[in-house]
Length: 292
Image (cartoon, rainbow, N blue to C red; front, top):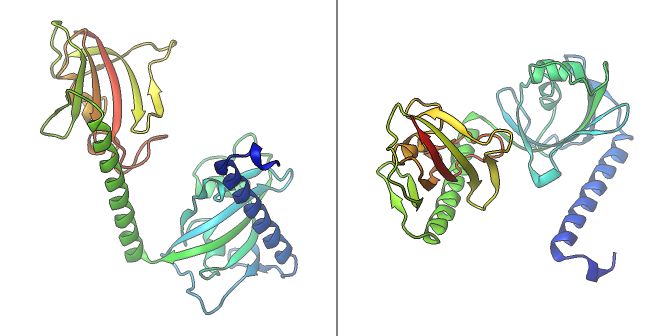
């Protein structure tokens, strides 16, 4: 590609893709020189690279792995942890993959295949998707990046949670400084009255009808009123919505529009939800159309 046609960001993405493809090609080539072995559960696997002196995976461990999984009959990608640089964390006694993981060490890589029916039923608790042919095998190439016992994993999760909380807190404070007229409640809910009204006050047990748009702090819209469902109705204070909404709507009057800036503990907390990452403060533009 001509250098003037590719931005530095695009170049970086292209290089990452090339490195990922090169790594996978090297792994597959190396695997061809190794013999298949069999786990106690009968899964055939082939070690690609190993270091017997490295930390072994044992029962009860959490294993951080890079993993690529493809269907055997058309080579289509099912799993790819290299995409977005997000390794998987898998228990070493996971019902299907665990049988192979427990013969590996930190830094090891291996190749193996598992029945798609077995994987989806045992690992995901659901039938094989209809889009995958009956009897299809999924070919895996995995690399063990790290191994953690239960205490080490608890510590790692705690550290990661702390980092996410701090990052969100800083981003939220920065966003709030860009607003005027912010009011903060005792719970930590922040709101701005965008449009005031002398309409009927909403209270606990009021049935309200609203239009809304929900965003992450970076402006990404994750939910909003749609033409096919232009309004949302619920009863305030009954736990039908996140706590930040229950509190925020009880402050509003019919005809008003508020901007709610909801901290994660009043939204989806440590778990997140769908496109909402864990420990995310959320922004909602809410128009209160009716109070009953």
